[in-house]
Length: 509
Image 1: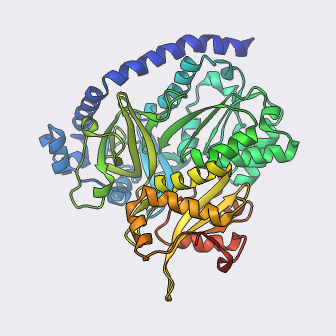
Image 2: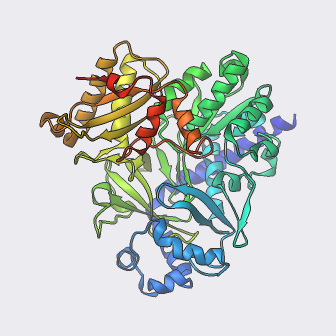
Image 3: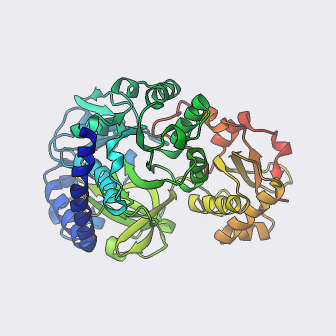
């Protein structure tokens, strides 16, 4: 009875929040201008604001002229002062948390979360679920158990500031009324070793009334596989009331077919776009593609055309300047004290009324070893189209350049872990190559000009990517396999789990 009361009272609250979200769609541009002015007003009193002449900033043009785009390395000197306990460095006072994340080039990064910014992380996750509830009418999931596959909630102290993974920090802010629904137990969530933790999660949840499951798709798949191995059943039979899957962190599409097959029935999904730097967008309509940009939550957004991101003075657009179907690098300033911060993700607007985006990749994850500048969206689209045509399910993949040291032409090398192999691997490779050529004219020109030979596929052993992630200490949590690399660090490691030597690789030639 107590559980049913939750869903009863959740309905009117969901409708209220949904109406608020709908209203904010109409005021997005005005909200962004208000946030911009509010950020500058508070930033005036900080060390960063004084160094960058915030007193002179009245317009976005002023901001561009005084505050250059930065990456984490450029913020490190300020973060170090915060870690030393100094106040008013990037934002008023000191952060209430430091979110600890592993950067690909910066090692461990410490991203500030302030009293002002914490609501962005908590409320956006809540709003995503409530919008789903309001649109779908499904409030029953709030009666059952919910699992959030996340990092450990245990926090250390760095410079006196509680520090840990973002998912662990957020865990401390789950409302009391949801605590009885939350899985796994606190003790299990604190286990650092992912495989040990996964086994314990399976033990705790296998006999529970699971209704909502959330996490990064590859780790959700691992959880499902472990459940299937233990029971011999489909997920729909283990958890008959399971009705909602919440996911984010990577593009869902490459994992979707395999996940749905493991579940054994259609299921509603909600996509999120969270990061330590802020919760940027969420899927407000589970039946439509794209995520609603979070324009009224303490974050001011700028957008740099992806083709200009490496320019010394790239064009910096505000929300009112963006166009449909163009790739932009996302730049954020927020009430945690990040200023013109390049988060490294590229997005594309698929709607301007309201402002909805899809994440198209990472600006550092591309291949341009030969001038082709192939991006994540293109390789994912090329592979998925070929896979859908043959009903092939892909578990994981990554692509790297192979630069020839002899008279042979260079090529792109695709490491793919298949759930089911294509009947004709040679034709499958050809289809991917043709799809990619249609998506990227530079790649097409290189193939036509005999600069590159067509791509080659190296099938990876079952669980090969899991083994690779384990070998580099990045199994589980918020870690993801990069889709693209401009070097061969990942590719050379994956050779250990290739099904065949490179000389027996399947090509499309």
